[in-house]
Length: 133
Image (cartoon, rainbow, N blue to C red):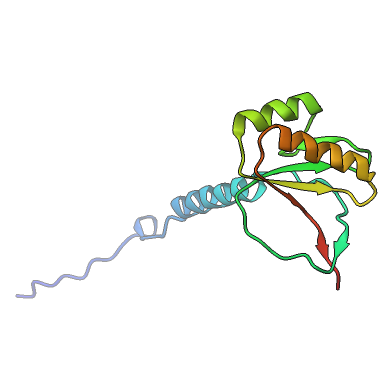
């Protein structure tokens, strides 16, 4: 007696690979990657930094203040007035403050921001520059 019977499938009963869960999973992964790719922690402003030969590269945890070519103040990428900046710096008390000033900004304007930071209690002020090549 032959216990092994050969089972034959009809055409509509054949096995197949279901790709729908695979497509759903890949779509979810692509969506996750797209959200990560387009999420930017900071807004970058086009400031052309002056060049210096004696600049050095440093990694600091600091707050950043930007002075645009028109002399406008930006704190963390958002426009602020001097009074607002003073209050923000007094409240946050950063140990380091990085000042990114466009090379076309008048020296007096840079000194005003430096003085404001010192009055607010900032201990160390770093002026950002590009290295000459």
